[in-house]
Image (cartoon, rainbow, N blue to C red; front, side, top):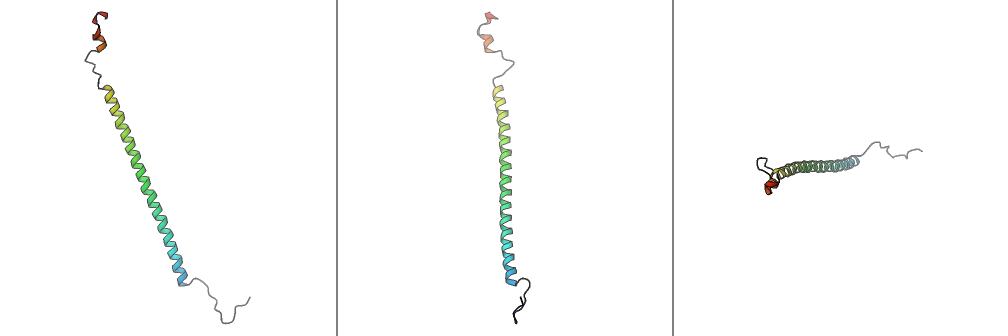
Length: 88
């Protein structure tokens, strides 16, 4: 095929094509960055909630242990021993 007489052979991109492709690339980059920042924030929030759950579990464990030991006084005789001293 021969080019038509008077037709120019154009190679490369026009300025409009280049600007449109840069704009599309910028929009895609901003969307990807926004998604990354959202996922990063969600990850930090989940990590903080996990730490709070661990701390609460440790506090409840200590509280449970303290409540179980609340009535335990080794210096005081047991009630069972004082019910009927003749059986001892």
